[in-house]
Image (cartoon, rainbow, N blue to C red; front, side, top):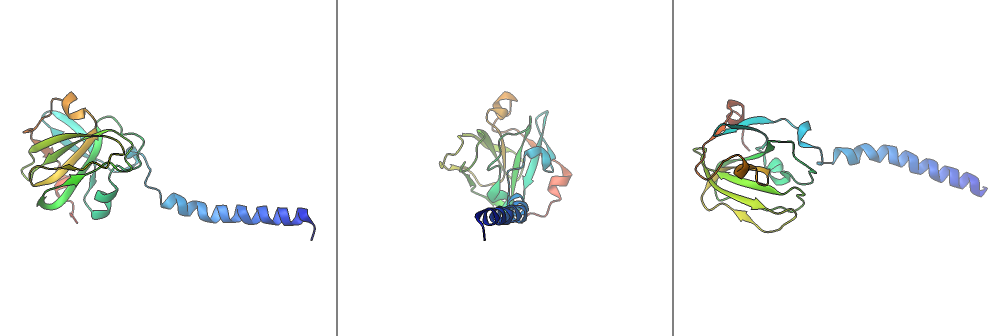
Length: 162
């Protein structure tokens, strides 16, 4: 066999492998922008935001990791089956975030700022059922503070929490 045939054949095999594996790599990606995900309205005071809802263990584990940005007034609402102490960190999260811990009466009990890629835990001081992550400073910018009432849409309340 001459060397040009071996090079051509080797390249052909690599191209075939690339075409076979590329869709697999795409299917494993969780890097999609928030605008491609289903969002729900969340009202706090008179401000309406839009949030993806993480209501399964997998969704809560992935959260907003690997995202490059958030759309304006968009975030992620984490829902748990019952109230408990919640703890969040920013491993693999590129976007500076603020988190509001929310009890089962839909009252904000705590707001923290979180630094990208930090392994520092942000733990709720009280048992809560929800946590809402928004772009850092969003709550302050919109006059939302501890004690503010959150309005979750009927669509959110009808989700089967796992």
